[in-house]
Image (cartoon, rainbow over all chains, first blue to last red; front, side, top):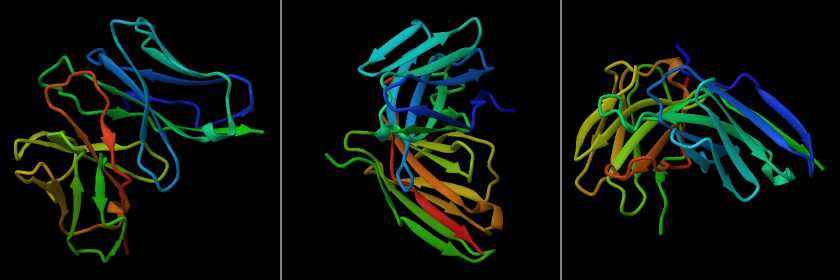
Length: 116
Length: 114
């Protein structure tokens, strides 16, 4: 039962253009969503997050959009840079639910390649 | 400020053996979670420790067990290793009372079972 899905295994984008990574979820209890970036031989690094009470959160070149009715979120990177090439994981948690707790449920990841 | 540290970074074990992985959380963090990341997949939650007790557990068999020490560091033990246990094992730390905040991950331990 995959509660968090990233349907695009990979994405290739030209330097300077926009990268859009997508994520869908099925569990209505999720109330907090995160994006992590992972380079080979390193652990995941937190990138940006959004609470379910918001529909947009922006941090520099990174913006996350949340559409609760569609159970969909997306990460926009503008402009994309070669150093952004990595695996991006979408994750969700249900912090507001004591029984479910704050464990993170991850998608399978999307490999982003930014070409110079 | 040291982040989350894990040891060892790589490990090779034989089927049927037992393994112990170690994790020191980020300074000030009191909660440790363990994740298994198989090749081509996202991290899967194994369990979480707080106040030296297992607080939550994912869908993993009893061969997977853990421990948390008074200094908040943690161990993950896997008994009777199977080939399918080969994966990257990640440790993450948080502060239990801080809701809606990110978890910090270590660099992981790459376990290979042969």
